[in-house]
Length: 372
Image (cartoon, rainbow, N blue to C red; front, top):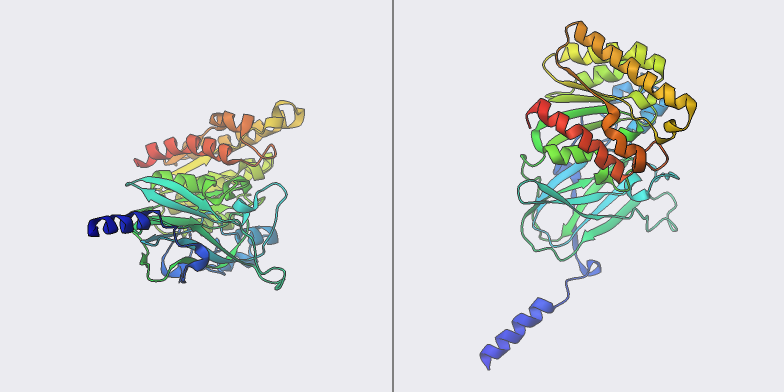
């Protein structure tokens, strides 16, 4: 009888419902007390903005404002929590007509399975619960997952792509252990700096983990600093000088052609790349051609103009090589054929599928160059 009672207790425990999120007593850990990754500079205006504060008076207003988005930034941590959520304050609570709010101002939770496979756990819907009672509130709070196994796992939360973040807290149930995690997971000694346009910034991924630089980061176990500035990736020399100041860069990925005119590609490319190459002669620089948009197949102007921009970009690469710069690589856009067919939201900006194609094109080149 005693044995039967014990069996019933075990069965009851196995099938008892998990504690609902509403019943959890939460503890909130400031992301600043964990490990912030994919951030290039410490001297930014806010904790989660992307270029140095001193550039505010040196760049166009539009460039400055869009650099305040938190694209690419993430927090790394490890926890044995059974319940994980997030609480954060948006900078603007903005909205775009061609991009899902989950990518624009949501956050993604990823978990590491085994030694190297990152799995998407969940995405929060960035709903501001107290908006009706407090119109000025930009606070979002969500629970990603309940009923985890209570074992220590490595995690990552990706920040919004097209909004900024003032503060972010990882929430776990009271008593759960939470640390900054293993520093070799998204290796703190590996760093790529990627510069470009709205596409590089993450437009228009449906969720934050599908931004191209975030995919590359997971696949190469490397930090990737996202300096994609929507509409403003125009090879400003002050941006090159600022990127040259980032410490311990293993590779620069330069992808500005979509925001540049043919004349800009012709007259700015050489000196922009030269600033980086002179400052870091041993650091590889990868120059990526601009994509040929789907409508260019059918519109006479763009069918000739987009290839002209790429041709001007390439001529400057050839000039650099001819002038003795040996650590510069050029990647053609022909591998983005899949993006042309099915991978865009609006004929320009990428869907998740488009970003998958983008990463598939870039990652093999980076592996070969870096030996990773």
